[in-house]
Length: 411
Image 1 (cartoon, rainbow, N blue to C red):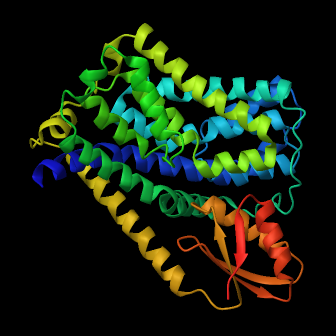
Image 2 (image 1 turned 90 degrees about the horizontal axis):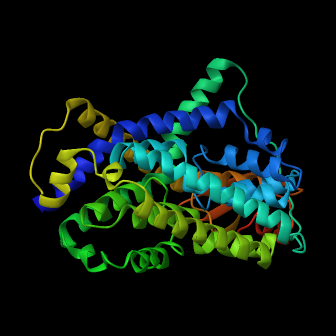
């Protein structure tokens, strides 16, 4: 047990201060740069819109599920298809929180290369969509372009930024972050130190195996960092780790299905090829052209803990940061439990596909826009929605489906 807990504790202490900073920046971006601003500059089906969309997407802390309704909203509000695909590719691969976590565990080289690769692949995918995706017909999108309501006044916005960063965002990725850390600890104990030596002379096979496993799964951009760190300490090449960091967060089966349904099969193909080719291509370039010394895990006590379970001295400020992060995770869990018990009974609907507060917010906006709805309460954990008012159930189902989710009425 000690051999498992020590690497887990070391990884958590190392990531905590950077995660807290990332959550703060996420809140600032959300409140002071409203989502509706992005769609104003993305309406043209040209390079400028694709470029701006990629630039907007790189720092945003949205996961591969949360980016879908946001992108669909942008599309509804006038963003071009090329700009939408660019945003879909660049956004989930990185974010201020995951960049900070990457720098803390994997070093500055990865922290620079990761968003750069996301940016380049987003531009490539967006431009390919502009050229070859015009023939795809969009499914009609309704009720996903409602305007955001943000508080007025600097103090109110600061409070909202703190709430979003340290409550909503932690509620979104907390589960996946914890899972990532637990997996990293298990890897450190269960995977032999020489495991990846078997693939040392077959780097492409190494990357393909990582891609095959990570692409269809939901992997949080931040939660993937400790997994990559643990695997690199077991001998995985930096290029293969980059494939995990790019392809894992960028896609999952839910996002693949929604992109194909809403933007068309040709656009889905472009979207997937761009992500896969970008991950593999830059993975190979990383292993063949860049110095291996750039990717050595920089903190000796983490390497020692992850590989051998030895105790090491961890700075007090990092331990305090880890304690704060743990308290915030516990608070987020308690809030979810309280919210579940507070649901009232109107007409109930089961909604599939929601995994973060962005998903929840977009569904709430879609349902609220239906004529006759007076109130809606959604529990993210169970996927249950309680809708009050005088309305047609089918209109609720249609509105949620148009927002990119599956919906059915329950008894």
